Amino acid sequence: METKNVMIVGVGGQGSLLASKLLGKLLVNEGYDVKVSEVHGMSQRGGSVVTYVRFGDRVYSPIIAEGEADLIVSFEKIEAARYASSLKKGGKIIVNSQQIDPMPVITGAAEYPEGVLDELRAKGVFIDELDALSVATQAGNAKSVNIVLMARVAKYFDIAYDKWVAAIKESVKPQFVEVNLKAFELGYNL
Image (tube, rainbow, N blue to C red):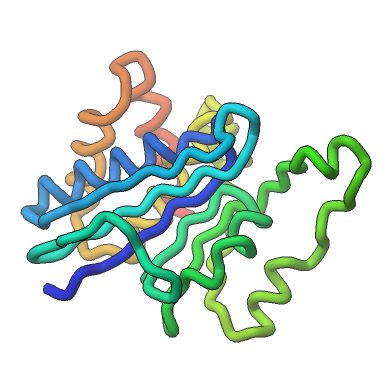
């Protein structure tokens, strides 16, 4: 199998690292060679966080070159725009419609850019947008946005639902399994 490349991008504290751990575990369980690389940046201060997940028959490097991502999973709209150049022709971006103001916007030094997803669509980028925060809140925990987004990712993979459930059970702390399974179910059935 040709190597596939998934980038998970977000803001520190959103759970993108757990999402990459879950996806990596699922793919290893499916028998793929998997490489995961995390770039934290200023993650503890709300800065950009990027994780690369590469899988296939044989993967030699964990890094995804610009223009090589098959799928970008974005936890926030600006992050989708920031990393869109990493997408390969025909690739897809799954994006949470949530807006998280970066520090320059919070301090009043800049305004949140409006229409970033519309600009990407106008350039021919495939955008799969969903309100993952509302779904996570409905499941019982707003912090389950990452699992809702992974449920959307599941729609693009030919891997059975129950295998995703097993990977969630292996990846999250026992006290959070139930709410995350609910978030996955709701996100999957959107």
